[in-house]
Length: 219
Image (cartoon, rainbow, N blue to C red; front, top):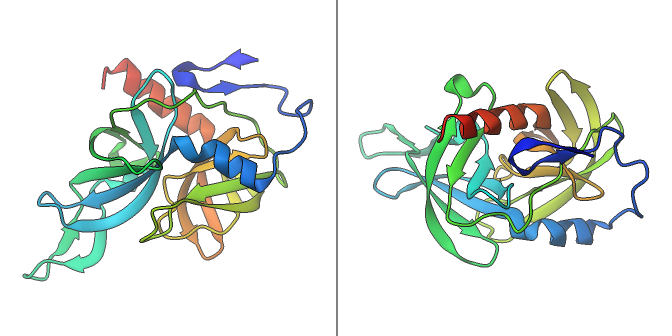
């Protein structure tokens, strides 16, 4: 087992000697303490969009989500007809606690499409990462719009390229930023956005690199 920085762990050998598969309900309940619903708002508090994020480290109050949450333009407009643009963020934890979160870092031009927000709580334990292969069973987890309770969608890894993979799993509009995990609850990556019944998703290597650079810069 190789220890990765920022609380991520990955087994180069994969999960081939793993215990019995967790059922979908177990995967869902195990991930609940990590999940965060994010409300993207204008500076004066008008809601622009809803996203998902997750805590990733027992030693950090960082919240991982998608980078396009920054400057996101929703369907609503101002009285002058200009689109509302997200400038600040409020987060809802699964125990019902709400608070404002501060943007720590996001990449220029959303390459990669990752942002780190800062809340007030750490993850209950540091997440483990894992390797994957086409056809592996995965679970996409996120909050549907207007819902305060997260949902879990079972799917498969449909294909992979350098640094990212595509997954075949249902994902609602509020799912972007949510975690994708395998049947052991190990992190595969984050949901980038729903396209019909397919959620395109960023690979974990990009997430490691980005969070590591965030830490090195003292953000």
